[in-house]
Length: 217
Length: 197
Image (tube, rainbow over all chains, first blue to last red; front, side, top):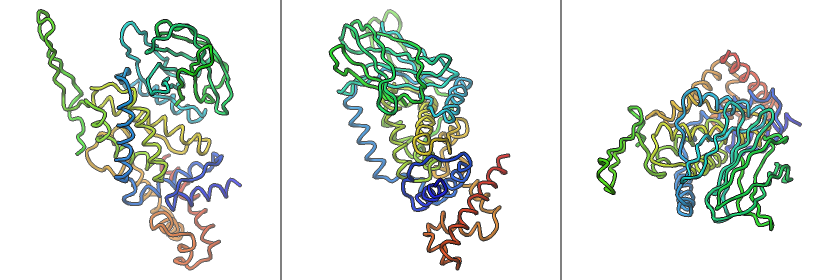
C-alpha cells in the first residue's frame, strides 16, 4: 500500500499537483527528498506567480487594517539561541511537534511578559478575539513535566476565565482557571498531554462565552 | 530590487536634551531596517516562496506554506526592526511551518530549513531562483546514475512527461517505465545519501 501511495505522491509532484497525505515509512524519506530535489530543478517554478503575490498582499493588508497596534517585537537572538531553537525544531520533526516562533511580549506597562524557556520543544499560539484583536499568548513546552504558560492582556474584563486546551481530534484535554483583573492575567501549569497533540486553546467565560482562541503552531 | 544588509543593523535615535520637554524625538533609521510590513513582504515574499518550493517541490503547497509564514509572522511583528532580525524571525517561522506541514502530510520530516545556510540565501542579492544547493545537488545525483535511470528521471521530472510518454520515448512498456522510475529513484536516493556522507 505504501509503495502505491509513494508512487502517487511522486506522480503528483511530477505534474505539479498537491500530493496527497499518507503515512510514509522512514525508508521512503530519501526517495521523497530526491524526488523533490529533482522537481525543484525544473526552471522557472521557484518563482512565485504574480497573482499569488498580489492576492496574498491584499489578504495581509486586510488583516493589518483590522488589527490593533502590534505588541510583540522580534527578539534579538544570539547565534547560540538560534541554534537552541533550531535543535528544538529538529527534535520536533521526530516527535511530531513544531517549535514555534520566538518572541518577547511587549505590552504597555504594567503588563508582565512571560519568558518561555528554551532548549526544549516549544509551541506557541496567540489568543485572538472574534474581532481579530490580540488578547494574549500561550506557550507549551515539552519537558519533564511539560508546561503551559499563558498571559492575557488587552481587554477590560475582570473575573474568572477558563482556559481549555483541545487536542488534534477536537477533544478537551486540559482545563485551567485564571483570574483576570482589568483584562490582565497569567496562568501556568504542568500538563500530562503530549504537546505535539495540542491543536488549540480557548478562553471561555464562566457563562460559556468564548472570549478568544489560539491555534498552536 | 532586493537589498541585502551591507552592514550590521543599526537604529539610531537622536533624542533632544532632557530640558527639551515635550519636543519630538528625531529617529533616524538605517537602510538596513524595515519600517513597515509592506517592505518586509515585498523584500522577502519571493525568497520565501522559492525556499518553500525547494522544500516541497510543488506550487500549491509552496503557496500555502508561504502564506502561512507571513500570516503567522507579520501579525505580532513590531517595526522598525533590522532586516537581519526580521529575516531570522521569518526563517524560524518558516522552519516551524514546514515541520508542521510534513507532520500533517506524511507523519515524518522529509525536508527542513537550516538557519545558517538558508539565512545566507535570504540575504543574497542574486540567485533568487536557486535556494540552497538543491539544483546543483540534483544535477550531481543525476550525473551519477546509469544512462537509463538518468533518462527516465529527466523525462519525468525535468521534461514533465507522463509515464506513458516517457515509456514511448524510451521504447519500453508503461509497466517497465514504472519499474524503471522506481528503481532509478531508489538509486538516486542512495547516491544522495553517499554524497552527504
